[in-house]
Structures are given as structure tokens and as C-alpha cells.
Length: 160
Image (cartoon, rainbow, N blue to C red; front, side, top):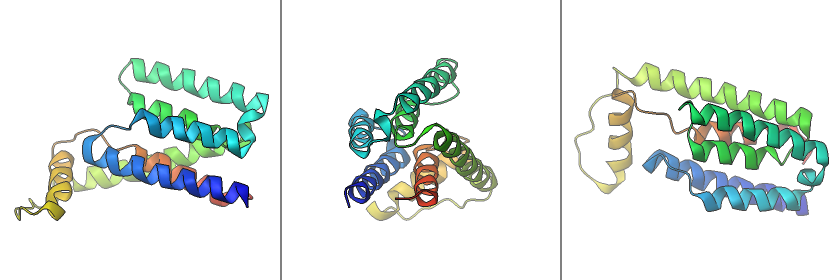
């Protein structure tokens, strides 16, 4: 019962991270810290190999961030969520993020010259209008979406 609650809380935090990332292309630090705390409650983060592999993931992603390849919030979010898994599962998690990110990138590339301009100015359409504008101009992807989908795919694959 405890593991189920922790995973549901992680899903909720990741949904919030997705929403904020789509709206402002930023992931709050407290979301990654909350996921880090949940990972320690879950138990896999206590294992020394899981900690070591997650540190390696963080260092590699930090290097990618330093050359502008990924956002800093994405680095922290991936490192925090990778602590939910053992090393083999962390590799599967990274693969799932890559697959989800590839699909997201294809959707954005496909929509770049095909999305209509949303002219109706309502609060409901504001996020859609801004996102369509970002897609048409080739702006960065909201990668928290891919991270959350990768996390969900990995946890549904596991034995929770």
C-alpha cells in the first residue's frame, strides 16, 4: 500500500511539472526535491548501486546541460525520478524518456508549419495559442512531458 501511495504522489508531482513546463518552460526546484523525498520513501534510492548510477546520470546530464543540450530543470527532474529505480530499471527509464521525447519531437516538427493560428482570445485558449506559437517558431520542447511519460511507462512495467 505504501509503494502505491508514493508512486501516485510522484505521478501528481510529474503532472504538475508537465503543466508548468508547457506553460512557462520551467520546472520548479521544489518538484524535483519532492520527487527526491518520495524516492527515498520508496526505498530503491537507499540502495548504493541505485545512488551511484543516479549520480552518474546526473553528471552526464549536467555535462549535456553545460553545452546547452538540455534544461537544468530537466536534469534535476530526471536525476530525482531515476532514484525510484534500480540500475537496470534506470536504463529502461532513460530509454523510455528517449522514446517519449522522440515522439514529442516528431509531433512538434510535424506541427511546425501545419498548425493554424488560434485567434480566439480566451483564457482557455491562451496556453494552446502560446504553444502553437512556440511550435511554429521551433522553440524548445517541454521535456517534462517526455520525462513523465517515461516514468509512467517504467513504473507500469515494474511491479508496484
